[in-house]
Image (tube, rainbow over all chains, first blue to last red; front, side, top):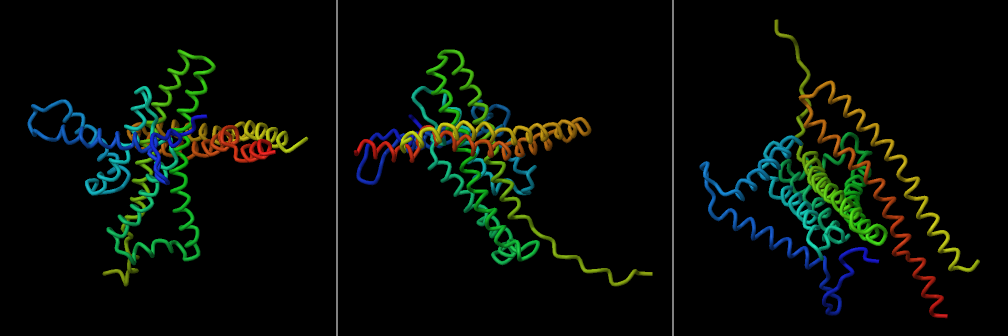
Length: 233
Length: 93
């Protein structure tokens, strides 16, 4: 039973397996990076621009607005990380229409890697914004008794991100595969469309959750206000 | 009943029950979430983008509970380690 692209091995050398996950991930990376490079070679600030530049501008300004609405006041600092998460997961899901393609996010390795990068990025941005001491103190709020629960919630958030994306992508591919043996022709096409919808929603959810976690970590806490000493006459 | 039969019956029955029961709670919760979002939208239509975004994030978090159950069911049916172990035992005999 074809569970994940990890099982399609093209070439093996001892411990290292060159499987379909690696192939499709690198193919996506090359397409996205070279596509972006080609489009941004001749940027124009006037009204006369290429349609690809328009598309990229819509994407970038849309993601910036979403990041700002989540609560991060300078979206340009975070759009590199969060935008890449969204574009990679969305592109991995959209390319399912290409025959012979298996989304690399249907493999637990890819989703675990993405969730681990969020797990590392949250303290990174938190320490960058607040300093090491303030960030570590935030684990002890509201009371120091919450310290183990805060740590456990960090770990379980990462696990939930992994399993959510993996489960959605893998079950989408598997349901289409199972349906092909039952009712070929019409129903698998409908299910593939549904898979596209859930893929886009999952890409949005992944990046928005990463943004929310980063916003929670970089929230500057105001010091407690001094009580009023007396009312001026 | 030998080992193979026990493992097979248990896996099949539990795989069915897991997703069956596991989808009830999240489905009810998602219904309540959407109902609350619709009420809020009706009262404040100009906050619709915030409400919609928060609704989607909430729905995804509830949905992930069902995804866990589905994962267990799929593992029990397709990559069942107990079944593989029992098959290897029988093949080795």
